[in-house]
Image (cartoon, rainbow, N blue to C red; front, side, top):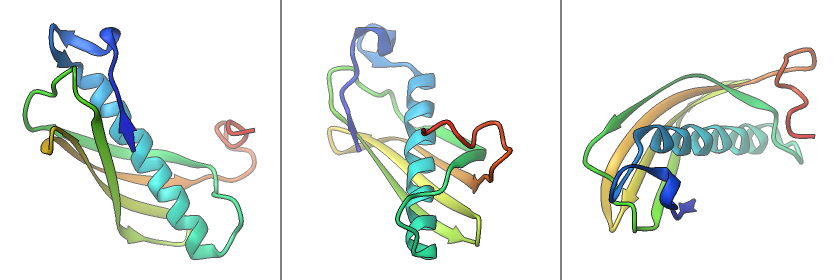
Length: 116
C-alpha cells in the first residue's frame, strides 16, 4: 500500500506523527489478514476482521514529504485469525515495523457489519 501524508499528518514540521504510522500499520495488517483468511477458506469475500493486538516500533523519523510504502506478511494463520508482520518505509528506508493479531468476527459482534 502507498500513502502520501498531508500537512495534518505531521507531528512537527517535516515528520509524520507516530499515531498516523500506527494507524497505517494496523489497517494494512488487518486487510492482509482478511485477504489471507479469505484465500485460505476459498470464500469470495474477506471476513470481517478486527485487531486483537498490535505493536509498533518507530525505527527512525518518518519524513513528511515522501510517499510511504506499507507491507504486510502473514507469519501464522489459523481458522479464524492471522498473525501479521508489517513494515513502513519512506525513500527505501524502513521507518517503522509492527506485528499484529487479527481475528475474524461473526454476526453479533459490534464490528461485524462495519463494511456494509
